[in-house]
Length: 240
Image (tube, rainbow, N blue to C red; front, side, top):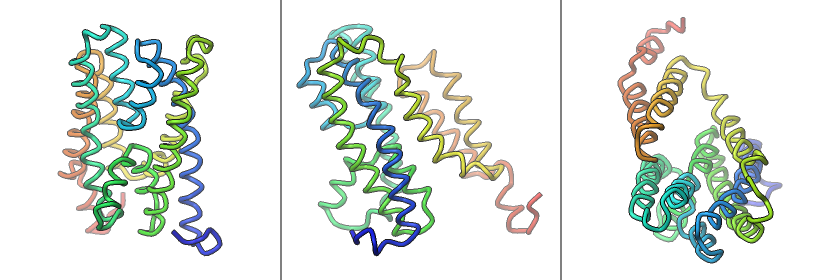
């Protein structure tokens, strides 16, 4: 990767976004570390989970089921985490042109393909900036998340109710900051609203992970089939 002084303005902007999102998301790892140990996992188990699993939503789904049912809920916890983690398969397809060829490069990218790294990458305008955004975000969050997971696991008993610190809100706010500029067109607004509505409606009644997958299907249908006719109006020159 070129030195900072040789980066283009787009690449520098991608790097700033990556660091901002990385710091906000990594801080949320404290919550995971604390909740995981309170759910019955040892410190080493908690840290190992972040090292090899590294999909925040799936990790929280796993410990959430474990906390509600103990170790006997293990199969359900694994199923829920796996369902939620399948979204990364779609991310990898989208990121394949950005990552490029090479086994080692793709193997490393597979570990770093998460919501935030994909969001930062796709928010950039040039291929070079997309690469910088993906790698910088993924590496920053991976290192920070594992560090804060350890901190949370070590001091979990001292933190009390970790939700009171608003770390989850910080991560969500950073993600929303990336998403907001992309919601200018009517088509993307419809996709966002439709997917969010479906996920919210189904969350209380379905297994963790399934609402996200159903919402993704809604997004694909609305976007791929151009239900609002946005593409047709663009081709005809009518922007109204």
